[in-house]
Image 1 (cartoon, rainbow, N blue to C red):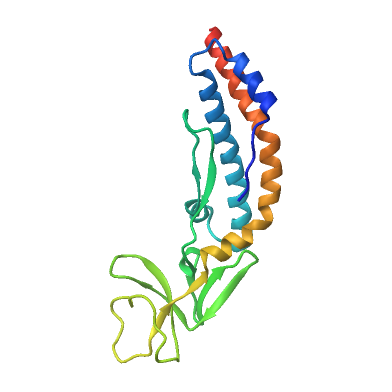
Image 2 (image 1 turned 90 degrees about the horizontal axis):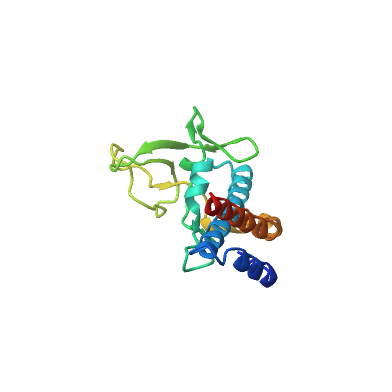
Length: 196
């Protein structure tokens, strides 16, 4: 996505400030980095939620943080690119099919229905006129000798990633501005606690 680095001058300043505190610098760096990554993730996930209509908790499952540690002074966002199905978009059955949240109002998928898989997973399915078209395992309880059905996908994870690229520039600029402040906040907190 993007990369930001702490200014070398600032890093040396933090190192001097925490010279007398055991493991003070690793604590400040890892916590400051993780705070900055968390703030970037919040911005990205809220943007994706607004653009797609996905529930925030579903977006958060796809945008996770690889956290910094005392030994590894870096943190980054990881993006899950698995397919996203309509059932994750607040799908509801209607007389004409299934409606879902699109981020800009609700949309309708005609001739679709909601069914429960043998595993208990709830999915949106649609009958296809093409006899050869079928993906996934059909839900239990459906009659035989019917047209094939397919699970309805809203977009691929890669498409969602591409959609979110527009927010990355903003998140990068904000993270660049916030990183030094977040680390400095941790430095001051560690110094206060050491003085108590």
